Image 1: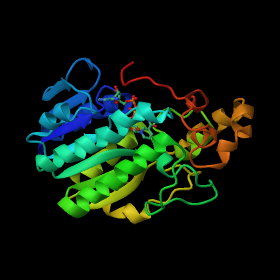
Image 2: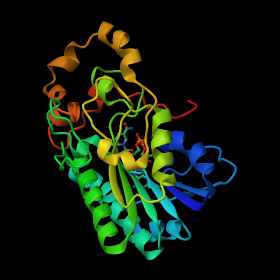
Image 3: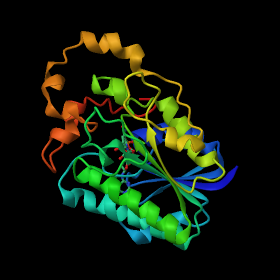
Image 4: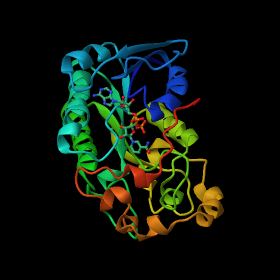
Length: 279
Ligand SMILES: NC(=O)c1ccc[n+]([C@@H]2O[C@H](COP(=O)([O-])OP(=O)(O)OC[C@H]3O[C@@H](n4cnc5c(N)ncnc54)[C@H](O)[C@@H]3O)[C@@H](O)[C@H]2O)c1
């Protein structure tokens, strides 16, 4: 059992699914978010509101912490200035604080958008080089490189989770890219309980028949996803897909993030259901 675990982005959607299982893996879960409240706390959970862009607010959060699940970020394609503080500076603040406080490992919520400009005809793997589909994807590339640098120079282990689509299946794209909430919990649990991870990259994707993602290079993490989006295929193919299928982004792993202009949100086309756990 880990002593103290820090979860950033605890007030967000994925945070809402992770808080309870994470609280069971450690003696104390420190949850943080820029939001002032995140609802009722679990038994051994404490909440501290903090801005990732402020080093003086992040550093004290990492005191006595063994591992960090870094999920806090602005999650959209927006002008660079909107992402600079939370996503770029925020990641630096997390890793530099981790170095100062001897944190063992950081599990980082990276994204498929770090490699979103690859054609869907290409099978992407953990060693696939960065090919971001916008400033948001670029912030994930920056953070993965930061993670690698702090591992090589300072020995801080990192597991970068290139999460594809962790939300209910609502589009044809998500038949390939879906990561169920249960598989998310399994993935983060494996990243935490693996004895040694060194610097690892793994895709956050369920066992979907249609995925063109190969995680075998990350087999050492023992992530065996249990869900398969195929069960939603007939429902999705009965819906009106015309708008989705004519979008040029459809040809790329990044979907609408690949076809939108830099700094312009494609979120409407993603049809994400933004409900937190319990809503
Ligand atoms: N949901 C997905 O399908 C998906 C896919 C790929 C990657 N990810 C990554 O997973 C993580 C969580 O995503 P989510 O879907 O839960 O998004 P979300 O927007 O619901 O949660 C992100 C949280 O980060 C917090 N945050 C933003 N700016 C902050 C700041 N300056 N300081 C502190 N906290 C701040 C927000 O308040 C929010 O609660 C993100 O890093 C995202 O990039 C998610």
